[in-house]
Length: 387
Image 1 (cartoon, helix red, strand yellow):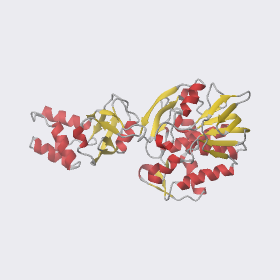
Image 2 (tube, rainbow, N blue to C red):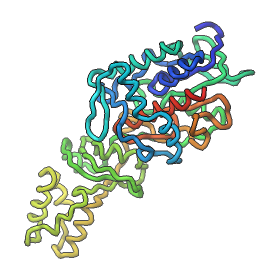
Image 3 (cartoon, one colour):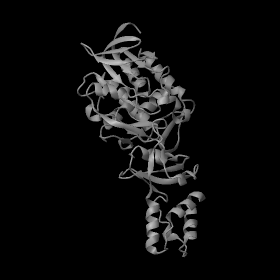
Image 4 (cartoon, rainbow, N blue to C red):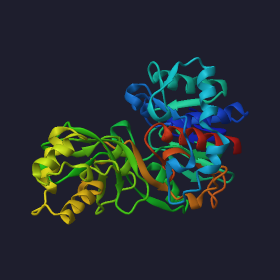
């Protein structure tokens, strides 16, 4: 990088959103520099989906995203859909397949996805600079001055695509939030999302390794997830819990329907005792879990009223998480730059012209299954069109 360089656009962060935004802006004729503080681009892409990258979801829709403003994501998602991204993947000859629930994965390594994005950057003449330490964004007489240990750049536009706080071992920082606050933009307090929850109740941990199909939701939330729950040595995980965790906050309970709405006890044999309850539950879930829940739910008296209470608890069993496994295990960060401060069509800061925020740094969080990548692609494309 030259001592002081003039470009049209500086994109900070070479993750999914940053690379696509830089590529598309470059292909529109903009002089673009893509700065990354790490030594490798697309590190979260490389580990996603077990190394195969769950890059989007065929069933992508605005209701699959969590935000303080649930309508904010609609514009970007409509401008650049999952089908637009799939078209790009096909154009690069990357083989992929649909897994369950509309999830699309690379047949081979996620490295193909990173290579595709870098090729698109090359097509746009993007200058990709890795290992850039000490990045600072300051106002300039026209636009912005971006300084670092590698020198300085003057740009009309700065795009912040630095992600959230999840998976710090990959270099996650709060840089994007700091820039937002520096320019007077509010930040919704971040917290770990799509993360396993911990339980102080040691009895649950004795069931580690057991999984069951359940319906789970955070107390007070209307959003429910009918997927697998997995008991771990620290608490609970599995898709149902990971999804619920994005809506859960400290102090709340997590409710679990262990029988997915089925009226089990009405179908019990004429016997009304602990053995009958255990046998009924064993027909719908792993034996050890059935035995455990029987011990937790058995009433003192086996009256019809008591059985009705057991049934009700089975449909909304309360777990009391002591916390989560934190950003180290979180797939995403919930919260971020307040969407009220951004233009939903372009991702530009309303009070700081020329400053844009895209991807995970924004208060938009997708469900599990490729939705967060789609938000990265959609927000990046919406931004690039405005540059």
